[in-house]
Length: 325
Ligand code: SD4
Image (cartoon, rainbow, N blue to C red):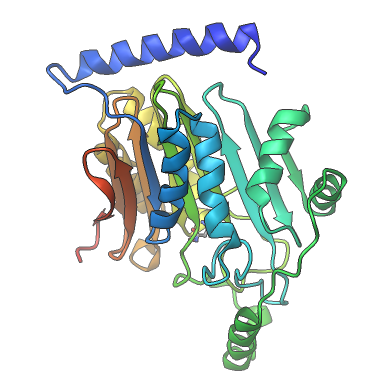
């Protein structure tokens, strides 16, 4: 239920934010909404599901959760939920977070055996005084709330893990993050009322050290939503995103007046400036502002994102990158 504090707060925020942004872009067209924006090609299917919620007049929060659940449950997606690649010891561990128009947020990290961690994160947000639950505690919480235990380690993922082990006999000593498997889904949306929400969910970097948690469940790093300004989410090497508090930075850059595209580029530049090895580092951001403008930028080429709005339909956009295509 929406409390009075929340109702008044959100209404004021929407008004102030829209006025601020409208002032920055004189002569801009009417705000585009609803709109869904998500990372990578699997975003198309997630967008479809989110779009149905939004066009039925639904809340952005419901849309982002519904959308990313599609990717979590897809066994062919190797970096999210069921079918995700494990850590180097063969454990599939999941990270996810969600944030709504009130600035409320929930998160789970190092969660095992639950197909849809995003829904556990939402439950943490809505039914506990906390933001984040991890590991055994998060699993206990999920099971106590009716989530079913499932073996998420598919035959296909097991085969890939065995092959990786055979190719990396000294794996325990390796500290190099795997840069090839970036399919985390980050999805942000604006609903018909102009409210923003976001969700981000992943099985993390393939072959990570056991116990490693990336940026995706960290509010401000993998995801940030400010209903006055916009929303952003990240993909790529989580350690680099955490160090730059990347998604928060993108939103703050939009607050200062940058377009979503420029905000993503400038945040990526910040990551580059802190990482001398940036030419080997993939990090990408996508962002959406209150006017329904979108942007996306990455360090390395190959990053694309899915946008769904009334005028353009559901489509892929190739992100600009610092290292040219
Ligand atoms: C992580 N950022 O765990 C995630 C990985 C990722 O697409 O984005 N994969 O670091």
